[in-house]
Figure 1 (cartoon, protein in one colour):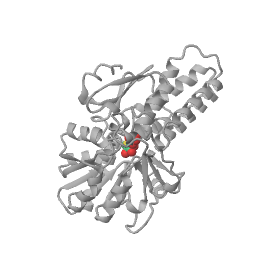
Figure 2 (cartoon, protein in one colour):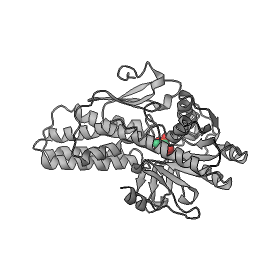
Figure 3 (cartoon, protein in one colour):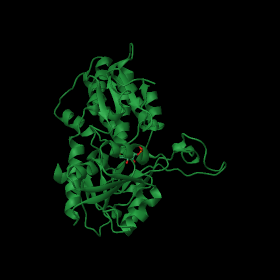
Figure 4 (tube, protein in one colour):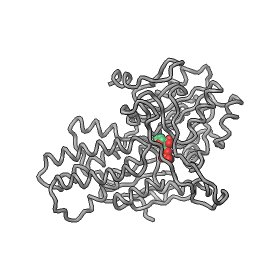
Length: 401
Ligand code: MRU
C-alpha cells in the first residue's frame, strides 16, 4: 500500500484515481471502493498491465492514462541505457504494445498507444541520444494527464441542453449504467502536439474521478442537476463488477444528486412505471456507424428503452470513436474470469455459484446504432433520422472540424 501525494489516503472524498509525480505513480485501488481508499504503487509497465487487467483502475479514459504513465515511471527510473535512440524507441514501442494487450475493448488505450508511438518515432528520428527519446515519451504521457475538464463540461452541457429540448417536461429522470466518472485528456495532448508545444516536468498532477473530472454520461447528469432540471438519477448496480453500486452511487451521493440505485434487472420495470425519461451511458468504443460497445448490460437497457419509448443516448468524447471500424461487429469484446460471476464482489468475495457450472462473462456488449437516439460529444450531439439504423459520424467530424 502507498500514500497518494499529500492528501490521497487521508481524504476519501477527493477520490483521486491517479496520483503522479515524475518517477512515481500511485493508483487508487477502485476494487476497494467505496469502503476503503487504498493506493497501490505502480513502478513499471508490468505493474501497470496488472493494475489494468485486475481492475485496480478501470474506465476507458483512465486505463489509457494509467498505462501511459506506468511506462513513463519505468523509463524515468531507468538507470543507464546503452542503446541508440532507435533502441529506446523499440523498447518503448514494444512496452506500449504489451500494455495495449491488457484490455482489448476500449479504444482509448490503443489510441493513446498509437499517438505515443508517433511521438516516439519522431523523437527517435531527430535525437542523437536515447535519453531524449525517453524524455519525449515522458512529456507526452504527462500531457495525457493534463487536467482538461473542458471537454467533459462540453459533453455535459450539450447533452443536458439537447435532452431538455427533446423532452416536454420541466424535470427529467435519467438512468445510467456502469461508471463514467471522468474523461480523457487525449484531445488536449493532440492540440499541444499540433501546436508544437512541449510541456516539461509536471509536478504532482492528479486526476479526480469524482470531483474535478466531470464525467461523460455522469457529466450529462451533473449538468442536468446543476441546471435544476434533474428530477432523479437512477444508477444500475452493473453486475458483475458493481461499478454502478460502488462508484457511480458513490459519486452521486458525493455530489448530493438525488439518486436511486437499482438492480440491473429492475431497469425494465422502472421504465414500465414511467419513471425514466432518458437513458445516458458512456462508451468504450464507437464504430463509425454509431454501434457502441459499453459495459455488459448496456444492450439490454437499450432494448428496454426502445420497448418503452425512452430515448437512449451515448455520451463519449470523439477519442472514443473508432472510424476504422464500419460496424460494431468488428469490436473485440473482452471476456473476463469466471470468478467474477462465481464469487461475490465481482470475484473478490466468497463463492456464491454452484461449483462446476460453466460461465460466459463478456465485459462489454454492443448496442446497435438503431437503438441509439444521439451520441453526445464535446463538439455537439450526433443525430440521425429516427428510423435510420446508422449515424454518419464521419460527416459530423468533417463538419465540426
Ligand atoms: O470494465 P470497465 O469498468 O472498465 O468498463 C467501463 C465502462 O464500460 C464505461 O462505461 C466506459 O469505459 C466509459 S468511461 C467514460
